[in-house]
Image (cartoon, rainbow, N blue to C red; front, side):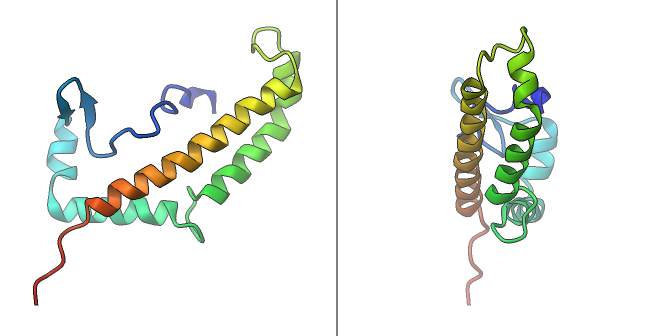
Amino acid sequence: MWDLDGAITDVGANIYAKQVRKGFSQTEYQRVILSHPTFRTQYNAIMMGLLDPMTGPLSETALHNFLNGVEAAVTSALVEDPYAGFDSEEAAAALFTGLRGWVSQRIVNVQGQVQVNQPPPRSP
């Protein structure tokens, strides 16, 4: 889990491009795949499926449950490790509370990005 600490930063990060000083920049992959209407539609459907509140493996409930399990399993080790930087169970709990908050906010943000990037409705 700690390998992801570089990815768990900006709740509002764009899922289609990297934000740069003056706008957005896409990698070649993003330009070819994510900017193609058909593939973007598929990408959006996959993202919404992963985040689906009832069945999604990356739903808020699923990720909170995962973090709850990790917290229960590693808190004592974090507190005992002199290099981890947690001097109490409360300090470790604050970390996991922050991670759960980030997950909740990020899911809302990603869902919002997908919803505004849906293809336009077909005309009759």
